[in-house]
Length: 381
Image (cartoon, rainbow, N blue to C red; front, side):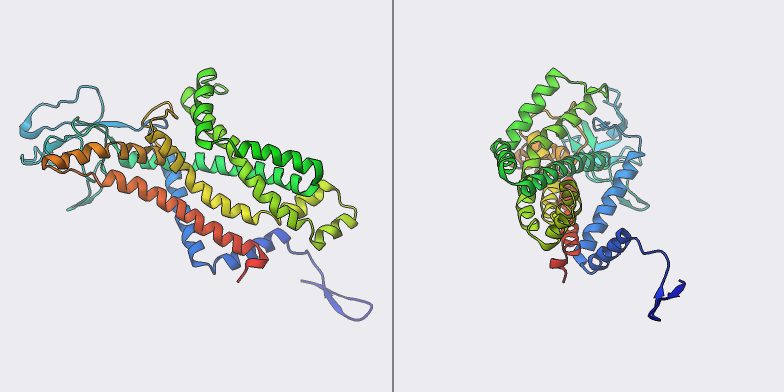
């Protein structure tokens, strides 16, 4: 870097000033990397995104899980698959394996196949996460691994779209309401109160049912994709008021700060003050709320599917919350088998979807908590 001599004889450096945004990113990373839990959360999120990207390049259905059939060819008998689904060689417990690459199922439960990992040689087999059974007494089932792989895409797309859009709308509405105050603030807050009084789950159910009946195909993208769009819209309508109220309370504090008064004294307009001073210094509570909401969306979807409400075009839609609900629906049927002395509990179809939801929720919580501490100078330790 070159230098120049001032009239006072002080040597002042010359050259291009560093980009303030890059400097801010470097400071954020400096404080973030000191938070172990935040780094763990970041690592899990990167892994989930990588799984979603990998799943996007696989030849899997986007709207429904692929159904398979267990052939039960014990003793060299003929295949009993008649619906044209892909088949996997199975045989009931107590009989000899009909050949290599066949997997054992409990007696009288031809669709219950445990994870097909083998050590000699090391292989994942066709069902690395086991079978997701439609009916334990029938031979048809779903590949849990493929559903989880495609579910990473849909879970990220749906939850991030709802939370990000709701947070953005709530942030702008809350910032305008808190900064302007007076009649504008009173009118906006009463509107927020109206939306907050609407039961979220009930509204989403009614909204999705009505719009799917009146306008099933959104912008010509197909009924299956339209179901997802309407579901996202339904959640956004009842999601933004929470962010608006949180941001409005923060703005009431921020607008009294000295730098806001200085901006007003320098002649800055309201729009510039809101976008340059109010909003950037009011986003910290939003990170906390977003961390809670991102992991909540798949859980709410799972609850609705479990209760029997139709949210997607297919009842076997590959989304983590929906897959978890499907596994729980069959749990009662499996528990009844314990009363007959032949207890069959397919732990894998409960473990893997539940573990995915848990890691997704906890990783976002860890990362957003670390980002809050890194971005807010008052919270840096």
